[in-house]
Length: 165
Figure 1 (tube, rainbow, N blue to C red):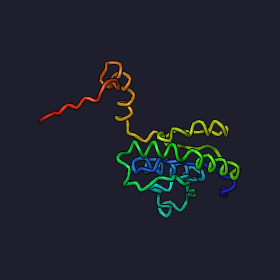
Figure 2: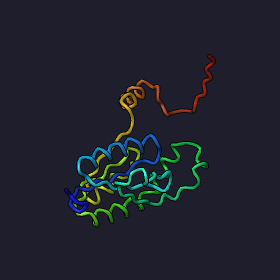
Figure 3: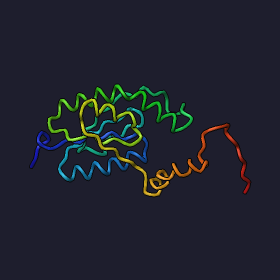
């Protein structure tokens, strides 16, 4: 039986929204059952309940967010988290890499767009997990076509159209 010291370690960095946490933990369980140790890096905002996953190690990083109720939409949370977590995530990842001789890679949620530069800086493998279903993936892949046809034009003023059913 392999000990924690000899098992390869995978670091996970899920985005702190339920639809992103669940797929990340499902993937983590698959890797754990294949013999990997799992370390979850998470924000203080909507942090996961570590007692639900006693076989994982959890490391919290500060996110400096104000109260979640003060955010009008998810996009603002997305931008704030991506700007405020750069230094804490970088410090955490650097420390974990130095402490784990068998560190294999970090798996990040696709919404953590700042992680590319940090993993490149540390020369550490990064895998991006896109946590949407196939239909959303196909829709996103066709955005360029909609933009080319002018359906998603961001130019000009915001046009409000009322639709009555």
